[in-house]
Image (cartoon, rainbow, N blue to C red; front, side, top):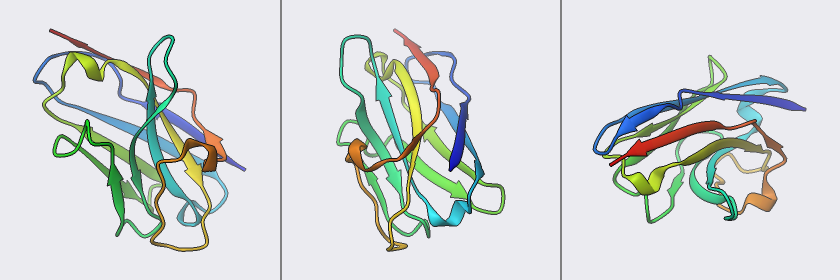
Length: 127
């Protein structure tokens, strides 16, 4: 089992930047591909970004491409989401998630494939 704890969410003005962090504990972190998702009230949780076990492969939702960057530090059991040029529509609760694919290069935006989830961190972007 993997425990995930997100942090870094806060209120920021449009055009600003934030870096979200996700701390993982439990099983061997390098066995897990990681994803970031977000959710607003009344809507389904949506894919934001994913990073493979070896950090070589990354995937992004079209809405955040060129603005958000996922990264991981396996030595620290951490995964990050750098968010730049934030927009009011980025306002949401952001969740990190973990899945354990056999391939070190695998990424997925399918939330059904993620086995472990954090509790979420609120990001609010004011206009």
